[in-house]
Length: 314
View 1 (cartoon, rainbow, N blue to C red):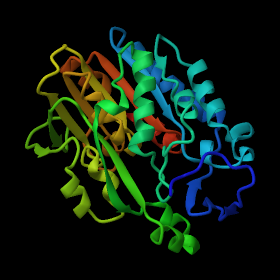
View 2: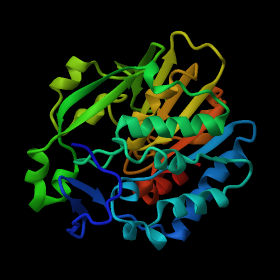
View 3: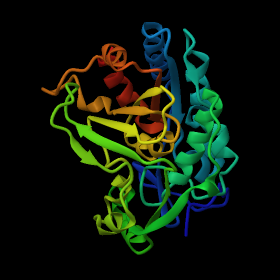
C-alpha cells in the first residue's frame, strides 16, 4: 500500500504535529513569505558572488501537498505558492527548478513514504527531471535504470504520530531505488580540508540495505547525511563540477546527478559554522574546486532552518 493521491473524503486525524490519513502520516506546511524571500535572497547572493557559475534553487514539496485533502494546500499552506514566491524573488540570474509541476503530473505514483517525512526515490527522480529541464540537460528515462525494492522500512512518522505508530509498524513501507547508469567513487570527509576521507557507496547494495535497521533504510542513498561527500565519476568526463547543498531530501537526488557531472561535492550546511563545528565558506570552496554549478536542494518543511545554515556559509 502506498500514498494515494488527494482524496477529498479521506478521514484526517490531526495530532497537532502531523496529519494521519489511514496508514499514512505527513507534516503540516505553512509558508511564511518573509522566510521564503530570505531564502531567495540567500540563493541570489550565492549567484552574485559566483557570477560565472550556474546556481539553482530546488524547492522540494512534501507529502501533504499531494496526499491530503485540498484544504491543506489552501492559502499559505500551498507549497506551489511558496515555491513561486521564492522563484519570483530570485535575482542575479539564479534559476528556480519547478519541482512542483513535475511531481503534480505524477501525483498518483509512490512519491512519498507513508511512514517517513522524505520523498521516495521515485519522487526524487521527478525532481531530477525538473532539474534537467532547468539546466538544459537530457534526463534519463526511468526504465533505463536497474531498480529494486528494500522491504520493511518504517521511518520518522512512526515517532511523530505517537499514538498511531502501530498503523505504520503493521504496514511498513518499502524503499524503491534506481541505480545510477555510470559508476562513481564517493569519499566522505568531516571538514573542508578533505583529509582522512572514508570510502562509501553512492548507493548501498540491496544486501546491505536489507540489513539496515528498519528506520534507517533511507540512508542507503549516499550513506545518509555527512558533512562533505566527494563523488568522482569513472566515466563522465565533461568538465562539469557540481556543488550540492542539501539536507536529507537531497540524498535521494544525488545518485541521478552522478550521470551528468564529472565531480560532485555534496555539502550538508548543518555540519558547519556552528557549535564548534568546522568553518566552511561556500564561495571560497566553490572557487577552490572549480565548480561550474551550485544546486541548492531543500525540502519545503525544512527550508527555514537550512536557510539559516546556508547564510552562515556566505
